[in-house]
Structures are given as structure tokens and as C-alpha cells.
Length: 224
Picture (cartoon, rainbow, N blue to C red):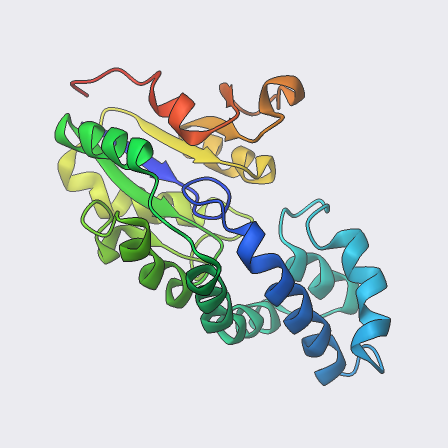
């Protein structure tokens, strides 16, 4: 058996098209609420520069560092925005990807232990799994959310402890954020960078580079 861990946003599901407008609006309001800007409009300039392009691969983490806020501030933001982001995906028309789901099911039937390791919140991820048609493939107990996946190895270790009784012979992680790979690598994961420009970027901490998750999954051998 092999552990196959997937990031959620922009890896398992293309969510940014639905989430970003809601996310940006709430983030601006959050910064005003906590006294960092006088108006949401004033907050947007800093956010647009750093929300998705920063050394942490996480906009709220960057802003927390910028304003001297702690991890609790970041977690509170994620908890507050989770239901809004979930609603945006559902109302925006998120739908299953039949080809991807069929491949995931095939891998699960052939010895791959499917897990999710994401910096998103469980209150956001879990309601979307049925919408994506994969709730039967990712049991809640194997969804490691942002309470554990931070910018350190902890979340990857959690997934390994959850599945250690199955004795996986190898661990894979597919993620669109290359910032996470050094931490995954330190836990022995084989890293696949999933990004539209991944083959051109050639992230040095990734062992594979694919434009879509499905193209990566198609390279995995069956009978894990």
C-alpha cells in the first residue's frame, strides 16, 4: 500500500475561481475589523500584492507576519471565512470531475490510501467533498486540515500516524504550493508539483511536475 496525500485548493479542486472574490472581500473587512486599515478599499492594495504571491504560500500567514499577529489570528480568519468560501463554491457551480474521480477510485481499489492534507479549514473542505463526488474516497478521519498543516512537517506526520497501521511502503503528496515541499520531503514524501506552469517552473524540491492532478495520477503504478 502507498499513502497518496492531496492538497485541496487548486490541486484536488479548482476552487480559486469561486473563492477569491469572497476571500478578498472578507480579508479586507477582517483587516479593518482588527484595526490595520481604516477602510476595506485601503486594505486591498497590500492584499493584492501579497495574498497569493508570498514566501509562505498563504496570504493570511503573510499578513499575520506583516502585522505582528500570531497563529491564533490566522486560525480565527480561516474559521470565520470557511462557510463563506464553501457557499461560494457551491453557488458558483462547482461540479465533479468524472475522469479524475474515476482515476482516484481506481487507485484506491489498487492499494493507495487517499488522504487530504490542506491549509484550508475542515468546515470548508468536508461539505465540498460530496459536491465533488469524492466523499466516499476521502473519509473525514483522513482529512488533515489547517489545524495541523502549517509551514512545518506536522501535518505530514499526522497523516503518516493516521495510516501507519496500514504500513504504506511510500508516501506521495501532490500540491500546488511548492513552499510546502521541504516540510513534506523531511517526512519522506515524494512531492509532485501541480500547477498550470509546473513543467516550466521545475521546482527543485519536487520530484514530479504536472499541469493537472490527473496527469500526475496517470503516472502512478497500479497494485501499490
